[in-house]
Length: 299
Image (cartoon, rainbow, N blue to C red; front, side):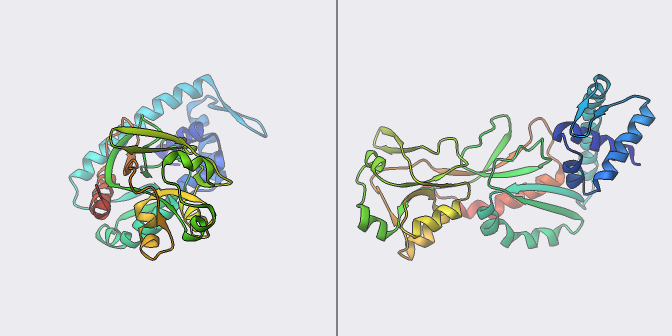
């Protein structure tokens, strides 16, 4: 048993609360994680976790070990980063989280050159539309479209894109086209269920800003689902330009309220707080900046 691996497994067990989740993250069997923890307790001559058939509880000694182990692992990671800065070859694993549609359209087509440039690096891409907790789920870098929910995370803007208010021609033929934001209350709006502001859309005209409550019969935590329903004529959607501009150009969707401005949609990289950026993560961040810069639009 490698003591650092066992220490990391224990820290992640306290944070995730599940042997199986730790095993998945560290890519070992659940039984291996359990064995590592048991061996740690034997070496330390103390019980770290009280186990039952359904749960586990951290003991007082276990909490002390957790706090000190976190510091030791952070120091080791910092030392590893310093040493890798001296090496021309980057190695190790990067766990990256991104929204499903964005990852499919703008990351996967460009990952090949990055992986070929760094043959000793491993990249695990976690495509999820929910807001993953970086520290709790062992994510090194996350990509978010829009303002981040967790203000404690470090962020870097990679690109800034407009938003579009859109609907299909058949929807407008059936229900009419709104001419000002307040009329949206009479329309079926397609909502993104992953956003805290999902029931309020913001518009501006001149010096005036309008907070417009909206509602609808369909919501999803996936933007591509909203595009599909909008194209089917089932409602009005508010979406980033990179997702709908091709559909607008092809006549599948129409832009609404052209005289009103919408908040821009920043594309941001989020990093855990209070952690030195490892050279391999820095390399991936630089790759993202180069790859996504063409998306920026300040119209």
